[in-house]
Length: 51
Image 1 (spheres, rainbow, N blue to C red):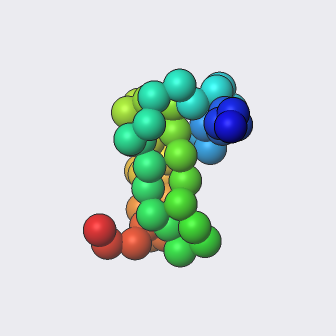
Image 2: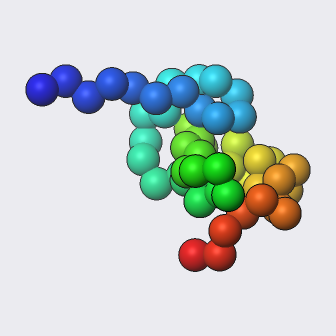
């Protein structure tokens, strides 16, 4: 079974490392690195669900 690679929800690069995710009102977002996750978090903080 092959695992399909996902694209970062901020920059579009392939996500190689798991663990950079945010739970949002419209579903989970996945990121390629902590930097992309942080930028997305700052831009959309009103849409983030508490963990």
